[in-house]
Amino acid sequence: MNEVGLKICKEEINNFITHIEQHFSPLDNQTVEYYRVIAKQTLFFKHILNAYPQTYFVKVLISDLFNFILNDINESTRYLYLNERSIIENYIRLILKKDEYISHITSHSFTDLKEQNKLILNETEYSKIMNEYKISCSYIHGGYNLANHLVDNFEECVNGVNVITKRNKVNRMIQTIDLFKILNKLFIINNLEVVDNSFHRNKYSLKYLLGKQYSLLS
Image 1: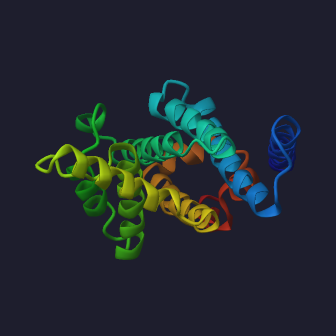
Image 2 (image 1 turned 60 degrees about the vertical axis):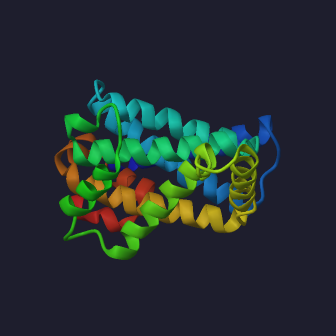
């Protein structure tokens, strides 16, 4: 079952990349690998959803990941960051599992995230999560001070968006992959039984989808 499941996963990922190139445009090698990582994330959560079909925020996360790729292809920057913010928020909901965060993620959510995972989440990793979340929120809402005049508000918003828009795409891709690695670690450690049940006969696929560092579930 392990080897069969692994083969199916690899074929599905390869078919997905081929489909994108056939229906949109050819991709450079770095973008192919970037989309491959996000596709693996999506397939990982599809396994979780198959085992736990009532998990609403997993469904939302899968949709966010698909739209994240689509908005990157279409260079729809605002919607890309909207998806990124939603991805981070839904990971936090699945990690913390607290009813108070079902409708809204607040600054206290991040404090809880840090406190609940203080033995496994270092300051650098926590800063990366916070930085990406702040960037996504800044792009969506702007960082203007409403006490200023409208022209000042508008110019501050424009300047803030321009800074984010000019982020080097390669650096952004690297930072996104780093973000996923951190969030995956937190998700798995806080949902060991869920992940183990979802991949109990398919551990090779788990390692393929998320990496060898998750051999703790073997």
